[in-house]
Structures are given as structure tokens and as C-alpha cells.
Image 1 (cartoon, rainbow, N blue to C red):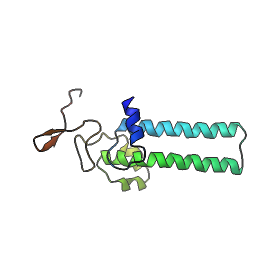
Image 2: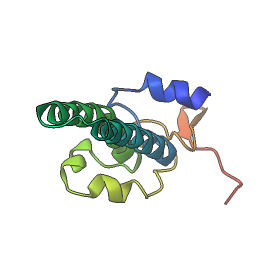
Image 3: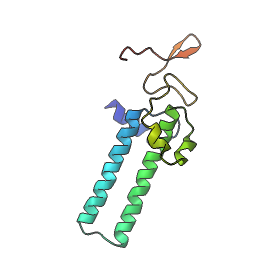
Image 4: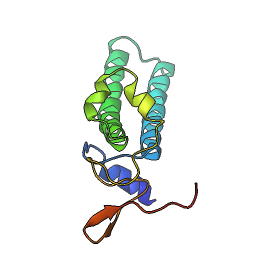
Length: 128
């Protein structure tokens, strides 16, 4: 339940990093909702200008939700958000594991970060 509240808290934020799980949950959920709305509108007989308007609105909302999480996902693999403009870059990098430990965009959402003296270190994972 905390993950859902964390996702909602970072809804439109471009700052920080997003783990693969956060990216895929957001992308697939929003896509499913958008496609369901469009399917039921088509099934209900909405056509012409009304369907075009609905299509534009749903795709705009999808972009507004998915763009920030895509940029944060690129940050997790230590890439600038400008990589989003390269076709398929976000999709390809979505499968890469994020940088372990902190990078220039913040602490790792997967590995976390802890302080040892004045140095930030990533914890050692034992589930490899």
C-alpha cells in the first residue's frame, strides 16, 4: 500500500529516480485505463468529433502521467531525461537495472542509501 501512495506522491515530479516496478506499474495501468475508456466509448457508439475529442484527451492525460515516470526511469539508469526524445530509448532502458546506490539524480529506489560517516553507500544485497 505504501508503494501506491509513493507513486501518487511523485505523480508529476521529474526529480529523482523510478525503479522498473514503478515505471511498469504506472505505464501498464494508465495504458489499460486509456484503452478501456476508448474501447467502451467505441462500443457505446461514440464516433466522429466526440470520439476524436475523447481520444485526444485520454492520450494527453496518458502522456502527462507517463512522461514524468519515464524521465525518472531514465534517471535511474543514469541517463538524462532528454533521452526521452530518442525513439524507443525509454522502452529499451526500462529493462535495464538501475544504478546501484546513489547517482547524480538521487538515491537508488531499489537499493536505498545509507550514510557511513560522511560517505553514502548502497547496502549489500544478499539475494543475488
